[in-house]
Image 1 (cartoon, each protein chain N blue to C red):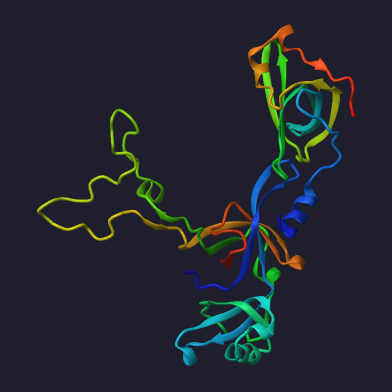
Image 2: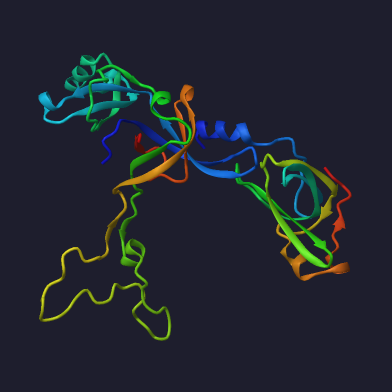
Length: 117
Length: 209
């Protein structure tokens, strides 16, 4: 990639997020504006996808909300994301966990990853 | 063709820029300038008025002697690209003057961008003109063919300008009313909203409005 483009991207990229991958349970803190007030909203769920890229890297978090599956895709470098907390590390055998969509309850569990390099 | 002053630039590539509110805007990064005015053409002397601009410095040893003489006349360095802007009032410009990005553009301005579109080679009518094409299956042998290209005994010829397969792209294309997202004059960089014609590293002509 060109040096100029790299420099523009580096200005905006965020390196403060923890390392996480598909299968991990994360808590995403999003700053949202409601009326004229700003507050932090939390979204906790399983990372079912990480899309690589420079500025357009993203990840999708899935959770069950009152029995309904909800997925949110966030841009990795979005400045409105306050922080990402990794709640648990999951052991999964594929990078895109779309199979979780057809499962619920016990079947949708993910084994915890004990040994982390 | 807009009769305004502009600058020459090189397309670097695309990325995205986040606003304070976290809204992502797709931008094209353009390295615009440094450019210098090589010649001021006037109605009286040249038959038309224009500003000749040089862009992308080049070693003087790589330039032919006649061209080098032209560069020396304006006291400028040797440039790879020379283009003209058909400006009507040329009094305020003089040869050798550098074109300032700051003076010409500011954030939020609309500009017209002229470039050469990517070459696609010899293409059929489906890709080139967006024809629907025929049925893919059901025993049809009419897949991506153009179909009938005209009538029979009258006019007994194919109408001029009929859309047919041929070379696609590599045309001069102008994108109008592109919004400037950012001007970084010290780095000679313009950030333009959305796409602009051409491949990366290709020459762009940026017209102010």
